[in-house]
Length: 181
Image 1: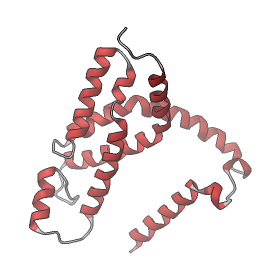
Image 2: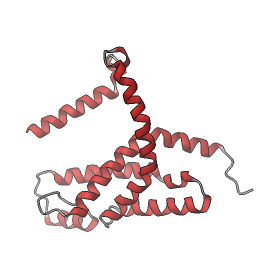
Image 3: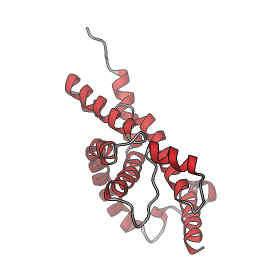
Image 4: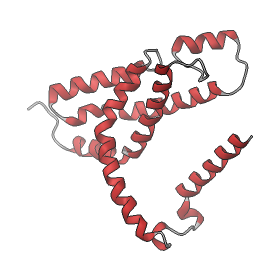
């Protein structure tokens, strides 16, 4: 019960932060936290650059850590990005299909979360889940499963963090000449 209350409280705080301008809350710059705001913004720019650099490696780790049908799109996306990068010498090739993988990672996290709920699933659903690579975290869970889940969540968080930068990069690359001439 405490876990559920903590999750609901976290969700409410996140929603309040997202829609703070609509709710009329004071911004960080308007409070006594304003000196710390500059430090967090400076630290945030370094984290954003690190996320951009590590995102392809984390995507590959999600695809390799626990080989299954669920992680196959991450592996294929990594391979396609590496091939594109090697053929064009353009770093933006590493981020090919990021929109699709962003949605897929979110759906995958929801699926894993729902499978962790204390519900007795039928044998057919358990067989399908184990066939496609969805797992339950328990005492017997092996290291690759745990690493796969951690890499999946970190991939989603990192991609959420640099999403606006990737959108800007896609816009810049689409306006430049991309023809073979």
